[in-house]
Length: 300
Image 1 (cartoon, one colour):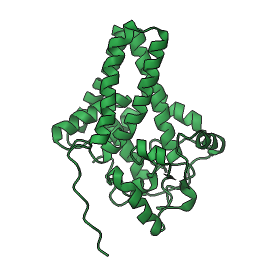
Image 2 (image 1 turned 60 degrees about the vertical axis):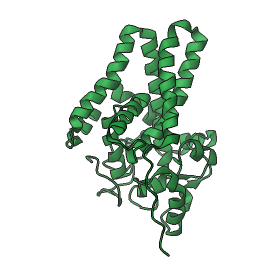
Image 3 (image 1 turned 90 degrees about the horizontal axis):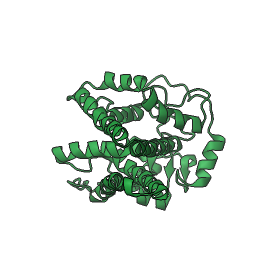
Image 4 (image 1 turned 135 degrees about the vertical axis):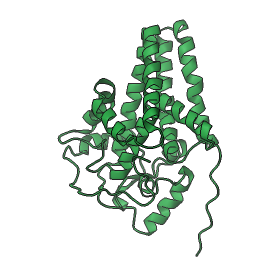
């Protein structure tokens, strides 16, 4: 049976861009309303900012694989503002993320847990070190940024994100530090998603590269982020095709049943299970990259 040809990708992915537009509303409102708000109002704006950041990360992740805005200039602008929304210099995070796809959370993955490191320590260490001791991370991405003016983009992205934060801290210290706190808490939660997506997976086995969450709530609001096994096998597939791709991969025994869960990574029961059971042992030994068909190189 011949499969129907894939429909053309939309020029603008409106559902995802609508989520990103929430940040464009929140961020100026956060700055402009700060002086007029009391403590409760400021805390409320920070909590709202955390939710907007967390939702925007789903868009940032998908955008790195399949652009939400395909015209060249629009793609460049959206890339920068999505990075800003999540506190990541875009090109640096892009290179770091595709290194993750190349090694699938196994040896060689810059974001891999360290020996003896539990779940909470991993999230805190991975979120804090790029801010307070960024030299290893910057060195890694700088060495791999060799194509199409990527090093210039790296410099501009760091100036864009870190420069804006520094300017706010110098202008309104409480405002700037509050935004930094929102970014830090949000990034800890983002790192949690990666940890949950690779809980008890095996980087050396093609049927066990990621977990599959079938949570309707999570996949509806986070653009099918739960279908992580299919995403690692077919990383350039648009988000709306991942459920069907998961069914096809399962029929080909490329989705391990033990790694399918009805819970989402943000479900309290799933969180408690990972905190309790995540092994502090290093990942399984692996000598070669498990780069999969269709996975771009980290220097793409």
